[in-house]
Image 1: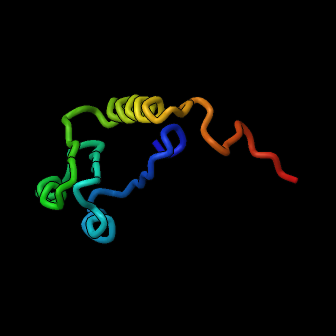
Image 2: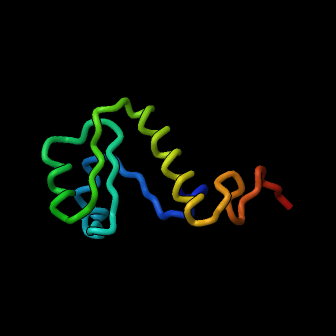
Length: 94
């Protein structure tokens, strides 16, 4: 999502989400659980107004869904998901 769509993303272990990340979650947030969330966590996140995705899919299948979403967001913004801004295919050390 970050490279292809230029969208700010962060990843956390589920139970760590209850601390700092929860404080910035609001109605402009999407919180996507890869795998089943701990009991009560999805409901706590939903109370912040965030859109919650907690589907029963295999987490690896959800990665494909996230990549497809990144392509759609990128394309809608007029970006090329295969040519991320300011990135190269390799690191060149001076």
